[in-house]
Length: 194
Ligand SMILES: [Fe+2]
Ligand SMILES: [Fe+2]
Image 1 (spheres, rainbow, N blue to C red):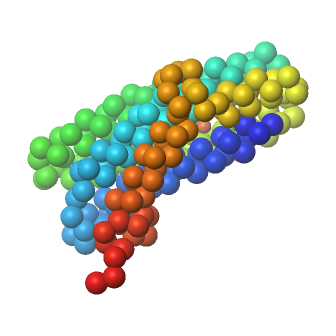
Image 2 (cartoon, helix red, strand yellow; image 1 turned 90 degrees about the vertical axis):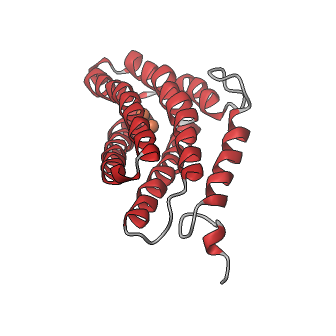
Image 3 (cartoon, rainbow, N blue to C red; image 1 turned 30 degrees about the horizontal axis):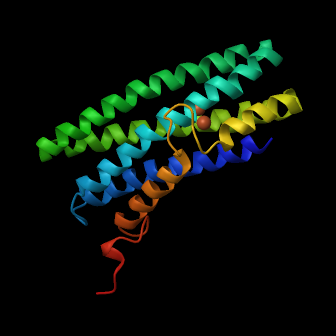
């Protein structure tokens, strides 16, 4: 059942990146910090490379699949969560397009801020549904052999989906985000004593 803690940790990591982006844009909109497109680019790369390519697909392929087999009555919840993974992919593509527009035309900042707010809320609701409804149900419903397969998938460093030592690459990416993010989200240049 190690996968439960891993999924919760992954949710915290994903949330910290999305919230970091959201709060950074609040500061940019208020004129308190300049916009840092390199940092925003690193955040988008993280969302593309981690939740979209690994976290959600592993939930679909391992956790949701085992739950479907053990608890047919959970199908409506699993269908809804799977549909949110698909919608999330579309929302992310739209969000990225909004950022690209903002990069070309700084006057579209308000639209980008609004799109990030919407994306952040969508993700927060999705993760709450998984943590409040699905994970407690899975903890009761799944057998040891199910958890063995799910744990192996989530503990895997050599991820089969992208074929790279995923956790190392993502740790480095996360360090990069923290290194260039201004305080209080990171330890970037703004944190240096003046
Ligand atoms: Fe999910
Ligand atoms: Fe999740």
